[in-house]
Image (cartoon, rainbow, N blue to C red; front, side, top):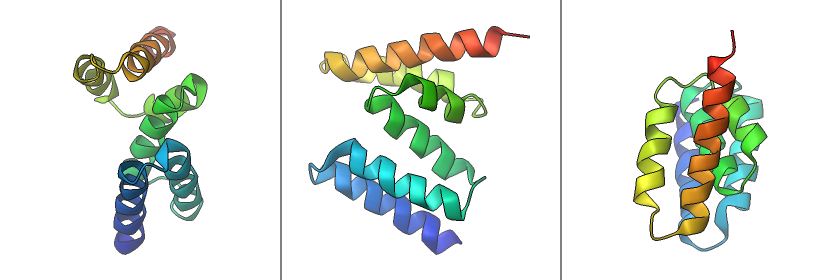
Length: 104
């Protein structure tokens, strides 16, 4: 299982760096999640891949169970200040995640 997770994560990251982008990473991580549905690292990576694709609903469904996700989104919002598209996506997900987590 560890090799599948490591291979999927690194392969997904390589796809992003190679320029094929987040859709390819999201597809690869989705396939891996079917094999290992509750792996925290895969769920978190899949959530962030969805965030950069602008799929806020799916992002929140993945990241609501990750306690540090809100802090990570704050960091991404600041980090991507030169990339308004990604910075705004991080901000939008953070707001949606706050709404979901504040519900009783």
